[in-house]
Amino acid sequence: MKKIILLFLFITTLFAAPPKFLMPDEAFKPQAKVNDKSQIIAEVWIADNIYLYSEKMKFEIANAQGISIKNVQKPDDVEYDGDKAYTSTPTFVIDLEIEGRVSGVKEVEFKIFYQGCSKQGLCYEPSVDSFKLKIDTDKIGGAKKEIVQDTELSETDLIADTIKNSSMWLVLLTFLGFGLLLALTPCVFPMIPIISGVIVSQGKGLTTKKAFALSVVYVLAMAVAYTIAGVFAGLFGANLQAALQNSYVIYSFAGVFVILAMSMFGFYELKIPDSIVAKVSSTGKQNGFVGVAIMGFLSALIVGPCVAAPLAGALVYIGQTGDAVLGGMALFAMSIGMGLPLILVGVSAGKFMPKPGEWMTLVNSFFGVSMILVAIWMLSRIIDTQVTILLYAITGISFAFYLGLFDHEKKHHHVKKSIAMLMFIYSLMLIIGVLAGSKSMTAPLKVFVSTGGNTSVLQDNKKVSFIKVTSISELDVVLQENKGKKIMVDFYADWCAVCKELEEVTFVDEEVKAKMGEFVLIKADITANNQAQKDLSKKYGVFGPPVLLFIDENSKVIKSKTVVGFIAPKPFLEHLNKI
Figure 1 (tube, rainbow, N blue to C red):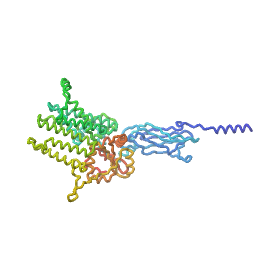
Figure 2: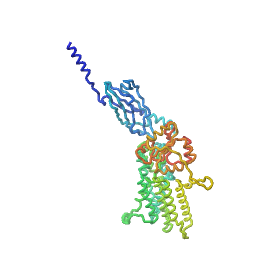
Figure 3: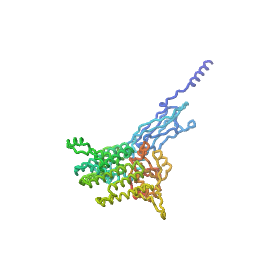
Figure 4: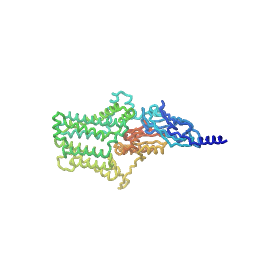
């Protein structure tokens, strides 16, 4: 009997011993891979007597790369101890979709979140495991579906496809043509007084041959700057305009133009020291080329560039393929096309240089004023609009006095005096308009409207109202709140001159305003160019403002309707009518 009792106690003690629990890495072993359909196959292997909470299973793509999770196909779970759980190894099939302009193979960081327990009475802490996966975005089912639904490509995508599918020489000729067309846009206009002023400032001994050589150096330096900036922007998804739109840089460069202007007015002679000139001359080289090259390089970066469809198309191509060589060659060809008219301007400045005398002084003064106007135009990116208008007005009045408006000596030509008078009157109109609250250069007195009798009141020019966002999360909230509506997103920055032109010319048109009322209007402000705003631009494939994106009632970006750069009221109205 004693033996039986002892045996019973031994067995009871044996079964009462504390169980041995597995370590987390022994209990759970997550795995992830990509199948031939660019779906992610994820599973969490679990040991015996282990189970997973199904509601704790979550998946995430950390560095999106324009790829997001569309749907997760889950296995059936079971009821266990009052919770939904997996008691055997579950396998998940994750369907993906692409956002924005994405193609090619992208490496993403895929994360699996999970938590489980041991049936012996121990619950493990929540865990997460990461996997580096390569996704072929061209095989994603959502991408193919989107292509079928929206066969019409945007102008930017068409240009990117041209680079992909055409011969190198055709690409270069095409972009040379694009450059010539861009030379007719306001983006290039500020460079005209710059190159003219730089050529004229060379002074005596300037021949047509040297003027041509200096112009070519200026344009080549400009093209190199555009190409380098463009390639980096394409490869890294950077905002092409924002890097040098820092207020300190703009103030400094505006100051350079003012210094150049003062030399044109004859306050001092801006030249290389005689000792250096002598050394350069002794080697048979001409002076002035280095300075012109530096000016061309900096002008390209800071005066521009304006983001237009050809530029954006080249950047999209570089970003999608990583082919910086062909993309860079396309940008260089486009820059040369933009620069060809500037070469003609430079040669003209040298060929038609007047002989020394009063006429020469007047020409120098004209280019001096042009330099000051360029400086003010640059400052307009970072100072208030009304302050900018006042600076223009002060410059106009000063030049009118310089031309001898109130000098009654007979030697002054009537044409010159007439020009001075018109300049003086217009400048006074600008000042009166600003004092009355106007922010318009073209119609400064439009703020005054008659309401009958002799009474005048200020006109209230109502502008369309935008919802301002500065990050992906803010935009997502607004998009969610307005799901089922047509949406327009305006990528804008305070330092973007073309953005202001859109606001002051296109968005104030009465017919355009009426049509825009059918859309939810969102302004994506990327002025600060901080990380949140960089991520916002990158997600939607924006290389710089202005860019107008349109989103349909199903919350899908209508890629074919994207507008890059300035668009006039009438074409924009026609564009809106097609959405």
